[in-house]
Every structure is written in C-alpha cells, then in structure tokens.
Image (cartoon, rainbow, N blue to C red; front, top):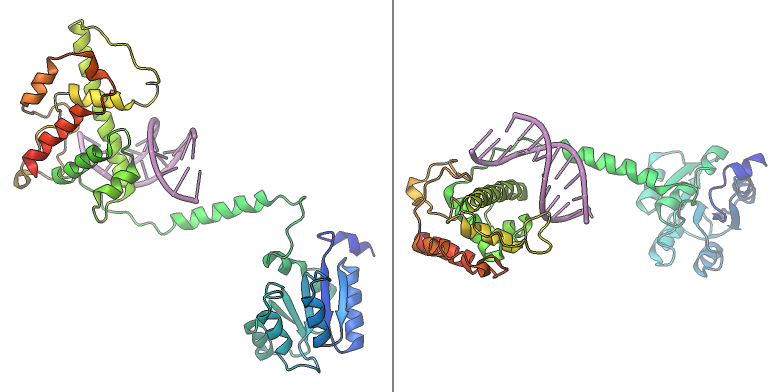
Amino acid sequence: MELTKKWKVCEVFRVLVVDHDSTSLKTVCKMLDLCGYEVVSANCGIDALEMVRDGENDVHLVLTELHLPDMGTYEFLEKLIMDQKTLKLPIVIMSGDDNEIAKLGCLFKGAMLHLVKPLTMKTIRNLWQFAIIKGIITPPPNINPLLFQHKHKKITKITKQLPRHSRPKLIWTQQLHNIFLHTIQAIGIDKAHPKEILQHMNVPGLRIQNISSHLQKFRLSLKRGQNTIDKKKDEESIIEFPKQQGATNSPSPSHLERQCHNRQFGPFIGQPKPLEDQEEGSLNFGSNVKHKKMTTSSQMEHQHQPYMFEVDKGGEVDAIFHTFHDQHY
DNA sequence: AACCTTATCT
DNA sequence: AAGATAAGGT
C-alpha cells in the first residue's frame, strides 16, 4: 500500500488489461492497482476493442495477453493499430512465449514491448513511461521539462561539433569581391546582410560565414575611410553637419552612403584590376590602394552640400557602382 | 532557432 | 592583413 502513492506519476493513469486466463487477469490487475494505476479489464479481444473504441474509458495504455481465444495471434494487436482512434495507444504484450520470434512479432505488429509472464512489480511500475513516449500523458508539472531540454541541447551541440573537418580558407579574389560589391549595391547597403548577400551572389560553395567575415572587414574599411575623411574635414574646418537622429550604434544607411561617397571611391569601389592581372589573395581593404580619381568623384568631392549627407537613397552609391560596372562588365 | 554582429584567434 | 571561428545578442 505504501507503494501506491510512491509510484504514482499522474492523477489518472488508466490501463486496460486483456487476458482470458482469469487468474492471470486478476493478478495483473491487482499489481497494477498496487502501483497506483487505474485498471479496467476485459477477458476477450472483442470486449477489449469495444472498451477502447467507445472512448468512454479513456485508456492510457493497453496491457494484453498475446493469445486470445476469440482472435488470431496478432489479430487484436493489428486491429488496435489499424484503428485511427487507438493507433496512438501504447500497447504492451504479455505472454509465456520466451523467444525472440514472439517478441519480434509483437514489435513488428506495433507493440512497444513484449513481456514474458509472470510479470513483476518492478516491470509494471515502469509501464507509464510508454505513455509518455507516445504522448498520451504529459509529465506532471512538478517535473521541470527544462531540465531535459537543457540536456538535450547539449547533446545536439556536441554531435554537431564532432564531425567538423577544417576547410580550406577562401580567398577573395578581385573577381569574387566584385560580385560581392555588386550584390551589396543591388540589395542596398543598408539591407545587405549575410544571408541576403549569399543568396544574391549565388556562388557555389560560398558559405554564410565567408560572407559574414568579409562583410565585417568591408564595414571596417568603410569606417576607417570615414574616420580619415572626418579628420580631413576637421583640419579644413568645414562645418559639421548635425548628426542625424537615430544614428547611434550601427551606422545608418545615409551614414554609410556618405562614407562611400566621401572616400573618393576608395579601394572597394575604386578601380578593379582586369581579370588577367589579378593577384590571388591580395585584396586591399585599406587606404594604401592607389586609385584613379574619377570625374564623377572629383566633382562630388567639391560640392560639400548638405543634401549629399542626407538619406538620399544612395544616388551617389548608384553612380559609384555603375561606374564600376561599366568598366568591368 | 535562425540569423546578425562583434570579438577573438590563426 | 585576410580570413575563420567563437561568442554574444535579438
């Protein structure tokens, strides 16, 4: 009796026991009861099917003898599986057949477990687990599901990390970088995020990590360019335009566009080398790259007009990229 | 959970 | 410097 409460896992856990042998049926029912299960029983397959189908009993698990006189060996099992209503029920078979054929037969027909009679208390008190597996009952609220989730996360993380062989590093050739630049221009510099860029570039084998890393360098170079421009402006004591609202942490679109423009078409936007001259791996983000001034750029440089610093949807950037485009494609 | 950005490492 | 990877954030 003491066992009853100890092993009880949820308020109502109802087991349907099916056995034509009345002694066996009584014994199993008693044991289930001792373990805290609610028990309903049937002594033949037909009755059992009825009980389980009308849904009134709300059975959570079926524990049945394999051999029922009113049905073929696996017939009851098959019928439970066939029926949509009982398909999800966990089914545990018991029988005197202590051999692999019988066990496998049950499993193939859809049972979760085959137990050899006589059953033990230890076994019976564990039966509720099958209902959890099948989703028939949910774990009691005093068991914190997060505990399990956490463990699960760790496991998947580990298995993800294991099969990782080192990849050869990607070299951003001038050509690849050109595609990158065009993509950014097409998407819009403010909306150009790694995934978008990757999809748009459509270069086989290119991974999002490659893009992310490159994008970081790219942005860094823009910032550097902007800083030098700023210094220059300070020296020339040119009127600073008030910073636009909301340009706090990450540079705003207009900010970036301004950088592109003011950098006089620096290395990124500046003259790409012809394909045949390209040196592998010698991409320059820095300011040490020589570049011709283009007519458009020098014109713009002398304008110094406020509107150029506004959110002017990147007319300048467009021009920059177009110039670039004309020369190389 | 996917994706982004920033930091750190080689 | 140029890229990869880790770490941190939404």
